[in-house]
Length: 501
Image 1: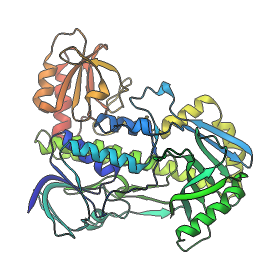
Image 2: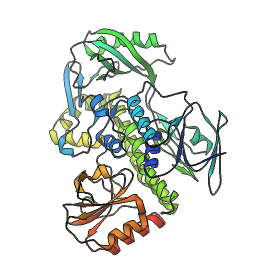
Image 3: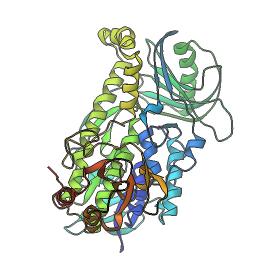
Image 4: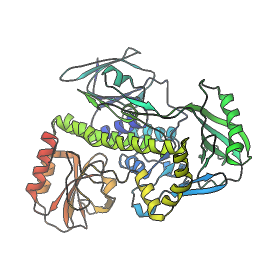
């Protein structure tokens, strides 16, 4: 029987991000997926700045910024009347990497390339069929005959997760909408390719987003359209024919509609796993939460789950932390999923509203509320999940911002040899102990290295406080130079009991 530290079930963006993060921490990993090979098409095609930051920290950003589009504007219309416009990519957000319009398939390809650099690769064509766990590990069995014993298993195998079913974790929820159509289709028209455009129509919402095209053409668009009242799954030709009807009917435009690269249908559900953990088996990404695709929250939330979980698993596997630290994963990430489900559900209901009150709010009140620039910045900041903080969680704390648990914006710093760097560049596989430049060495360095070993790097910055920053870019602890006891106490609480409160 094969052995490894962690088995990751599912080679989508969540599973691949988790695997890369674990390898950066020196953890052995097997990534297994029932699919016969990598996906070439995908529903997700927007990576928010926070998602780009995660990819950057684990060295998986690659050439994505060059291959993506900067279509950062979302404009909605009621008939031919503009309702509102939202702008993403505001430079005042101080992000370490840009938001991108790029297909999930390309993101996955870049993650696979990074994983290969780290000495691992997905194993295709092997579906999980059985799982048995005890106090020391888990044995997973796959339909190709593979059997693996690992210390942990993480199910990143989507909304129909076999992992979740095998450990009997409930996935309650509701169906929010009927059928939606998706089409990557070539359209010859004069619509602006600098952003996404949506039209609200009595028969249903339709939207189009420009897509990058490997062939060099600039006429590829992702179309999504609400198409209720149909129960049977249509053929590809039927979807394309329906698209040909919907575009002129709902947009008022009459483009030349060419061939389609991809056609699909879906319905929107809202679901949240009762727990993210059952013994030594954990859930992440769509296996733990499912919601409407509006706002590009799915892939973003999944890779955030992966980064949060990876460094905690690594500490426990390396016997630098006790088991309760793993429970902080659910304590920090499940409340976020609840907020994402609430927000995307509200947007969905408004977009497909039949209720006249909701329609009046959407068509006449919402544009006035959301038009001011400060409100638009708040909306885009929220959708980007740059606001996400764990300060209310078991590892968080109070005080002025950034508080323990808050995201730390990228900043300049220096390594021990004096070379310049940036904080987020130094994270991913390591913690960062940030010391004030010119301050004498303190016992804080010994405390951090004594508890975290090779998983912490020591840097200097222009601030006047000592900061310990987690591998996921969130503040762990801050204090005055010489407050060595404060840092030691935080590390003791976090690593031994999974709580610093």
